[in-house]
Amino acid sequence: MKTDRSHPSLIPKQWQIPQIFRDRLGADPGKQRIMAEEGHYLIILHRAPSAADRGNREAALFWINENSEWKSTPHGGGVNGLIEHIKEYENLVKGLEEGLELPHSSENADLLHEIHDEVTPLLRASRHMLNVLQELRQLFPENRKILLLRDSAINVERSSELLLTDTKSTLDFMLAQSSMKQAQEAHNATIEANKLNRLAAFFFPIITICAVLSIEDPAAVLSRPSTYGIVLAGLLLGLTLITLLRSKR
Image (cartoon, rainbow, N blue to C red):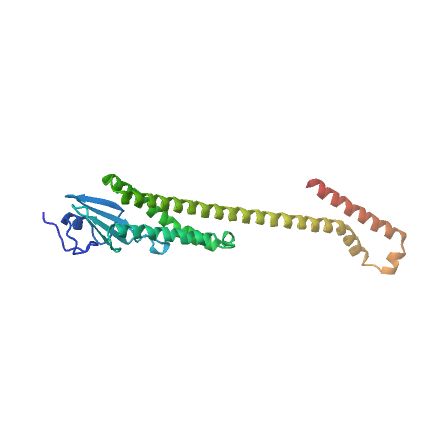
């Protein structure tokens, strides 16, 4: 069965690599990994992602031939290109950390959500990149540059994880603080409502009595000695209602 070699490939045409690499890698990089064939190694990594990528990943390729010579794209320079690739991650993490350290950033929910959305794919990609570089370290155990690059990838992965943890903790604290504030406001509203209820209970008997007595001539009502006794009884009844409300609380 013949292999169709006309499909688009991310690998530069001038690279003299085993054809199987081109056959196995199309227009999409897929997961980060290492391909090995006939003493050649093709390292497929993802460039530093952002939330705006929506899952679309741009490839960074590094080829090591049978003579241990390196080539790379889009960063040239072989091993130096891999150094630049990791620096992209480091710079993105550093920028997000600086955003989190801005004054009042811990009170800005929109900024925290933006940092959270940016660091989440960054952590996932850096973790997979670390796995690939660890595998590369095992393939070339005597290559000190690869060892240092692996260590840099460890730092990127750790920094990304700490940043995501800090962002989540701050968001959780803001949520708890907001819930406490709403609970306090609801408690204060309940207290004010109880005050109004007690006030209404105190004056309700008097208002009712006054409404009944107002159907007669005011002068005649005031001239009766019993009127003041009725008002006093209304006050006592109001106090009784307030006492009952307090006892129920």
